[in-house]
Image: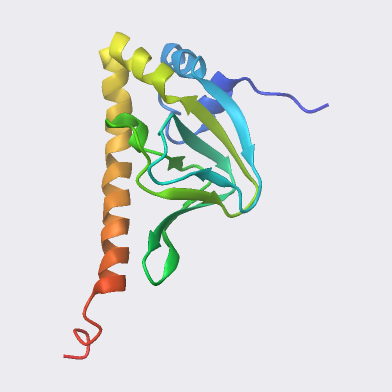
Length: 160
C-alpha cells in the first residue's frame, strides 16, 4: 500500500515552503489542492485572471509569450521544485505570460484570493511569502529581458 501524504506534509517537502513552521504550512494548505496537467495542456494565458499559483512537484512547464513574426517563444522552463505564477501577487492580477505543460506535471495549486486574504490577516506570513517570491520575480524579469535581447538585439553587435 502506498502512503498518501496530506497537503501540509507535501508542502513541508517542497523547497519553496520547506522551512515554514507547521502553523504556516497548515494555513497555506487551507488554500491549496493537488492538480495535474497533461503534456501540451495550457495552464494559463497571458491577460487571463491570475487566480492561482503553483508549486511544481513533478514535470516541466514552459513560460511562453507570443512574438510577432516568430510565434510562441519560450521565455523560461519551470521544473520540479520550482514555482509557477507570480502575477497573483500584483494588481490587476493578470498573467503576463502563457504557461504550458511540456510533460505530465503535478503541482500544488493555491487559490490566490484565499492566500491574499490569509496574508492580509497575518502580515508575518505575507512577508515570509513575499521574501520567497521576490527572487522568482527578479528571475522571470531577467529571463524575459535576455530573451527579448536575443530576439531583437543587433545581430552584428557580436561581430564588431
